[in-house]
Amino acid sequence: MSLFINGFKDSKNVKEFKELGPDVQNLLNAAIKARENAYCPYSNFPVGAAILTENNEVFTGCNIENGAYTAGLCAERTAAAKAISEGQTTFKAIAVVAQQESFTTPCGVCRQFISEFASKDIPIYAAKPTNPPLRVLCTSIYQLLPESFSLSK
Ligand SMILES: [Zn+2]
Image (cartoon, rainbow, N blue to C red; front, side, top):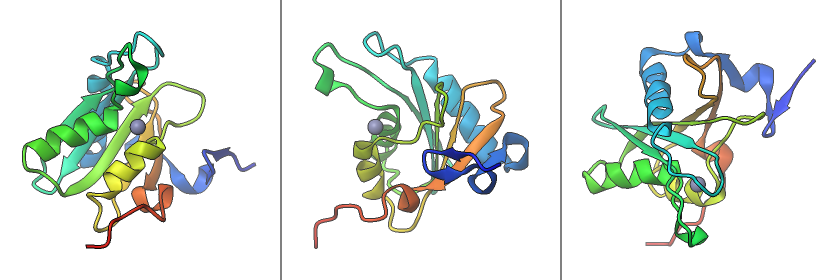
């Protein structure tokens, strides 16, 4: 039986946590820890993210909501803004962690935001926040947003 999650065939794109390399495991664990700081009194949907940059630094983020809803920030963009503001603009991998029935992948705005820093494809790992995570959706920014917007320079 094949199970589709967010359009991905389970058997092909979902791996066991223990099958993944230590860098990816560390990234997922960092996202789980960052999720603990989520400020989400409106949605009650905490999300954690972690970004591995070219120089092997990890930047984490959580979602930060606001009473003026549109002012809120997703976990992925929080992590990305931290990395970019520290001069790290080349991303190697991204982990996203949230608890719902299906895997949680970056929203459309975050996909576009990430794609700005994706001159080549970036793997994206999505998991539920169990400790350790059990199953991990392995996708990429190009799979999630194949035709991103970009300004001709
Ligand atoms: Zn988002």
